[in-house]
Image 1 (tube, rainbow, N blue to C red):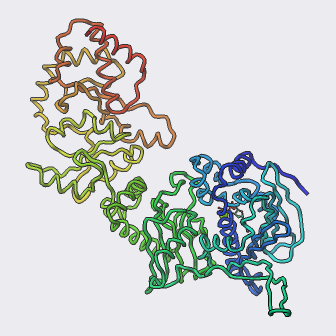
Image 2 (cartoon, rainbow, N blue to C red):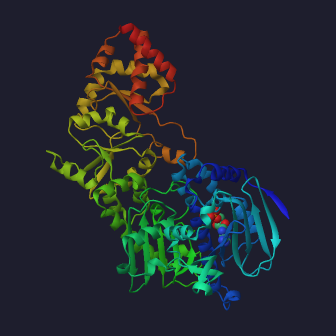
Image 3 (cartoon, helix red, strand yellow):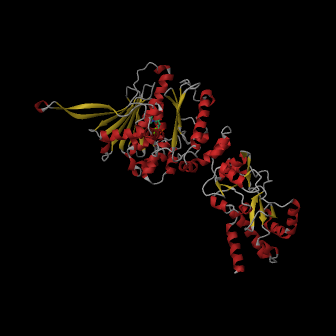
Amino acid sequence: MAKHQYQTEIGQLLQLMTHSLYSNKEIFIRELVSNANDALDKFNYLKLTDAQFKDMDWDPKIVIRFDKDDNSISIVDNGVGMNEQDLMDNLGTIAKSGTKAFVEQLTGDAKKDSNLIGQFGVGFYSVFMVADNVDVITKKAGEEQAYMFSSDGTGEFEVKPVTKDEYGTIIYIKLKEDEKEFHDTWRVKEIVKKYSDHIPYPIYLKYETEETTGEGDDAKTETVTKFEQVNDATALWRLPKSELGDEDYIEFYKTLSHDSEAPMTWLHTHAEGSLEYTTLFYIPQTAPMDIFRADFQPGTKLFVKRVFITDDEKELLPLYLRFVRGIIDSEDLPLNVSRELLQENRVLANIKQASVKKILGAIKKLPEEKYDRFIDQYGKLIKEGIYTDHTNKDLLLDIVRYKSTQVEGMTSLDAYIQRAGEREGETDKHLYYLIGDNENILRHSPLLEAYKKANIEVLLLDDKEIDEIVTPAIGAYKEWEFKDISTIDAPEVLSEAEQKELAEKHKKITDTLGEILGDAVKEVKVTTRLDESPSCVVPDSSDPMAGMAHIFRQMGQEVPATPLILEINPENALVQKLENLDDDEALNAAAWVLFDSAKLAEGLELDDKAAFARRVTDLLGKAL
Ligand code: ADP
Ligand code: MG
């Protein structure tokens, strides 16, 4: 017999389970049934692919056993089971970073939080919301020795050899004193119906009850054992669409995704012809919590002729569709399809391609309110798709939405193009955009002033990390070219001669500012792109690193900051005053304030915030 200490994170998790998340305790049944379902799926696969199990009689089922006398219920399956190492790995440690991710996402709202449990692969531990003690008695398919894992949900657990005949697992739960509701078979039946009706294996309740037979003097009361199936046990996705109502789809989604909200939409396809397969895809109302984590859990399960193959393949759909939950069930793949080589499988590649088109088509057709929600939840991933899915790039550019100077909310590129086309004198087919961290800063960027004046619409891209990589790579949409306004000249530029003349005229002040700012700027020059602001900063687009710096930074490499060019507005009263100022000290302070406030307007960090504040107060003091 061996006692073991839980990982620290699990200890933390158990604390949470028992002390804060108990408002939705019933979900422990959903989680344990879901694990039993997975175990049956795995054995089903073994039986069909491994000769040693081929001829075994096997009647897959899940049994929920009640025992009032010792205040317990048990969830029993004849699935794949676990050996000693599995128990240690799966229940005693968390190999995936599930626990940590889970704890990070907690909101403090017990109801919401308990709904996250299944999504993070920490479902088993939910049993400690109701259990004083849990024994997991289990025997792994093909092995001789059975084992028992015991824990009371505090710091330790124990694993020891035991005897058990059948392969599979018994989760024996000693209920806490005040959890009597789970002895009520009606209550449990209701819970199973609610969460697990579409588990494709039969779920039985097994309990004893008093039954009276006969009448009058002949009446006899005896204890009988009931064995009652409570779910449909059909693979819902194989049913014809005509037999399924919205409720069926929604309930199945909840079982599949561990989500408590109904999905945004779904699409169910039975394909026949050169390839025969069924797919059922859902788009969750709310983006799954882990989609921006490297170790996200894939949401699509692969079946072959109703036999579960894997739920751990991240690229059954392209990565940017990782928010989709669903099932692919193929008739054409061999059962023993190599999971390692799934990516190279032609059949699967065809199903994948057709599925992507279907899903994108369904997204395009979402009604307006849902569309807005979709963009809010998944807009970043659509942008990821634009960058990675060349086949569907145009379709994705049709789906994507951006903020813009000309509209409230979001605009499509088509709507932008239409507005631009209607603009008088517009001949350039350009999609102007500006990238930044935040909408508010973008809307007030001095770089927009010339465009506002010329009534030219600019798209405002505030998913900086993604936009910086994706947008420069797009090129064009329907022959309209994407143009970053921070790297091009403003509209209505002067001729070269006029520009030269203007630069010459203001050479004194640009030279002076350049001397004061020294290495902090690449160059100081006059600009016509500004209307109201005295100054702005733009990245030096001739710098070879300018376009690539953020990519290297994302890869975790140190990259020197892209040099900035300070542009000043000769029409601005402040700039004009500076041109005639003969006070070195004030000029020095003003140069830095012009530069720093231009940086602030673009949402950039200042090297020395205290110095900036000091100069502003000094100048104010002089002015007042
Ligand atoms: P998840 O199901 O998301 O992996 P859980 O905490 O629910 O997370 O379960 C942890 C692991 O324990 C499972 O992945 C599985 O390997 C193992 N497990 C749990 N219950 C059973 C069972 N009834 N039969 C076999 N293995 C099980
Ligand atoms: Mg689970």
